[in-house]
Structures are given as C-alpha cells and as structure tokens.
Image (tube, rainbow, N blue to C red):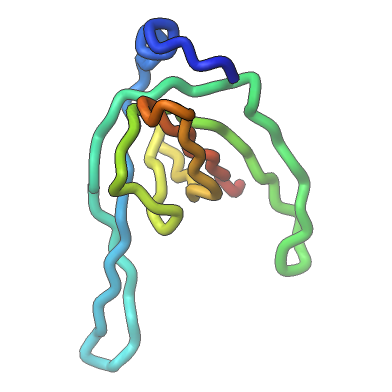
Length: 112
C-alpha cells in the first residue's frame, strides 16, 4: 500500500472498538475471561483485502473472514486484543506499521 496521509485520513470513516481481555479466578478456582473497551478509534477498512477461507476446525467446516483495519499509529495495541466492528468480533492476527509511523494496519479474522 502506498501511504498518502490525506487520502488515508479521509477514508478513516468507520468507528471500531478495540477490546482487551482480563482473566479472573472464580470461587471454584477456574478462570473466566471478560472483555472491556480499550479504545474507540476511527479506521479505514480495506475491503479489497477482505477474504474468506474455509478451514477445518474441530471436525467441522468454519468460515474465516479476513479484514484489514488501518488506524492512526499507537504503541499500546497488541495481538492479544480484539476488534468489535459492526456487531462482529475480529481477532487481531498481525500488526504492521507504515514507515513513518503515522498509521498502522491491524490484520484480523472473524470466525463464523
């Protein structure tokens, strides 16, 4: 992708919620996960990069939807977080940064 600052900023017209997970121990000793809002940011969604793969998971067919979210550069987002967009959750697979560190791309997957 060629990074043209004004072009990317103009296309950041979707609000996404980045969520972080926390684990807590129940009274029975097991762990439970709870997700909370970490940040709400403007994003550009590259629909040309969206793809769907069929994967075999636990003896059943599962559809995997790939999508890329471009947001302003931040240093506090990790692959352990997820994205909440359009009532669907996306696991962050990989984070790449543009050379001047003005933007970052969150490559993510949603499972159906």
